[in-house]
Length: 331
Image 1 (cartoon, rainbow, N blue to C red):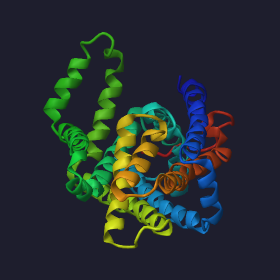
Image 2 (image 1 turned 135 degrees about the vertical axis):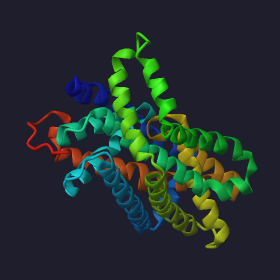
Image 3 (image 1 turned 60 degrees about the horizontal axis):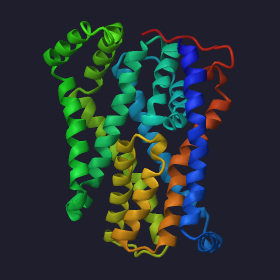
Image 4 (image 1 turned 30 degrees about the vertical axis):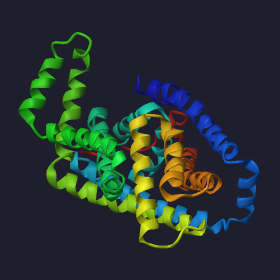
């Protein structure tokens, strides 16, 4: 079942969205006037993209630290750092599935490499997403104060994420719900997995672990915002506090919008929100706004996907195309 899930279901769902992602980039180019964007691309100092990718790489490193920390929280104590890093990076392309559902595959890989139950591994993946969500919400705070028209979406996501964390720490309420699942015909066969998932969630969402994870997430996403700020200054915006605040807010808030949309990689939702806010809030012309959107998505989403796909080339056993040679870690 797990092998079929990994090699057929996920890959078949992911590949069309990768193609759509390239089409979105092409569409953005035409929307922003391909002639003007081509001229801008000719004059653009492309080393800036490398600098931005460097900031994104710092984001990935800090998020990996959080991932490895979470693994230790659920009892994976002796997992080699390089193996953990390989699994972490290999998960990047899985974001190109609806609602990032493909990231569940990381839980399957984790079980194959360590023996930890899939449901418990998935709790780490969910904790990653929620802590990242809280981190980008924190980075969005000042912008939401300045632009109250966006406060409703901000508050909705904040209440949802904090509510999930609080509920996970109230064991009587959680077990009441879990016991209820045993009585529902369609759900009861998944009940043991739900219990395992909850036990993992209870551990990773403890107050101390949550504060550390959100702090790491806030710093890591801040680095991507710094890269975006650098890009905006190169494209002509003044290098001042207002531009910096707008860069952090726009990138963080577009990340929230992309997550809420549940679209693979936030395709379309992220691009429209970034370009739209650059035009409406910052006053950039449509050509520069579109070009900035293309560059930031190349330096973040597509950089990560490329790293992940390169990792796949040297990890064919994860995809079921090569005999597995790693030994399970004793927990």
